[in-house]
Image 1: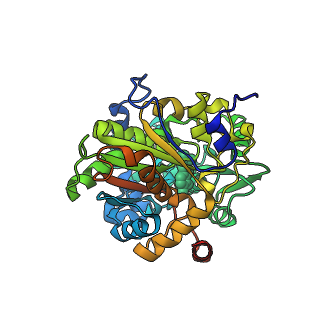
Image 2: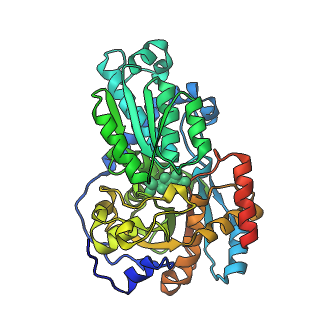
Image 3: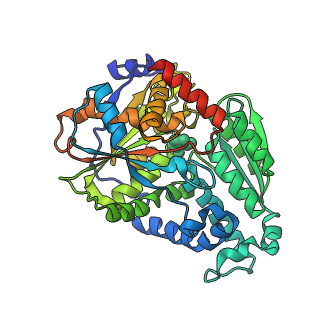
Length: 428
Ligand SMILES: *Cc1c(COP(=O)(O)O)cnc(C)c1O
């Protein structure tokens, strides 16, 4: 395809870090989703809570609700102020989805939700479950047998595969994860240990998804989790907003136009940040300012939004390779669903160089003893860049609440995490 190049696209093409303010922010738009959709998803997760608590004992403390902590990270803020010459009186928080139970990343929201929704449909259709039942019975042999007549498949860079694979296999579904061959070895091994079929494909994430979808279409009993356009994934992520509202209330944090909430979300295909963003704007209103961040080597959502082509353009069309250490964000073409939904609610977007991801990983470990994977530190870079560029000119930024969304980390093997840390140390 031929693309009319301008200064901004040239920056993207040259892998320069950028900060972009969305000119469509605040426009009215078609409503693809509603508050009722979020509540429906939330109620479904509540129905499954007794089952989750039973089969994943690590969720007993939260009674089967898969949720992460909200923590203030004042030491990291001090470190950033010194290192980056930041001036702010705002408060800095981390949403610890890097620590989510069961699969250790933000994908434990959408991915697990979609598998549970499919399981519920199958179980209700079997006539052996009714919506008023205690869903703990789904752990019984009888249901495992029913689920074994069905399959679930997904194409993934890794973390979505972990969520779908672990949950699908636990319920008793035949579960297949299609991965690009650059996906991490430990993720493939972990899945195979849990009884999941892992199929490796040459090429990138989009290719793995396409081939996975094709394979799944041949099997009428197979449910394909489509990371490039699933409504269920999106809504599973959106429930985070209801949970965050509760945590804010408990910690006395208010959100309004005078006390805005800035949220920094790492973006791959767009489903997780899109779902969370939609939820937050729906629950908190116009006081929420959403900022997405992508690697300079994979600015797929930004490219789709800027050109207005959404999934009609890939970073490869601009000569960008899509290769990044942030494997959760290594996506060349954005979701076909999310671009239109977030067009009027996204406030800004930034891109980040891979080296800085390692540096922030090390700084976060040193200042707060919090361990996250490289994809997950992109939000820290975005916080810094937004505050130093677009945000420096705007009211309330320096006094607002800033929330970096941690997205992955606690499944990463210790030796792998140690080498990330060391790499960050040498780059600092
Ligand atoms: C998947 C992922 C993201 C981004 O989510 P998308 O739905 O692909 O946009 C961010 N961080 C981590 C660690 C992830 O695994």
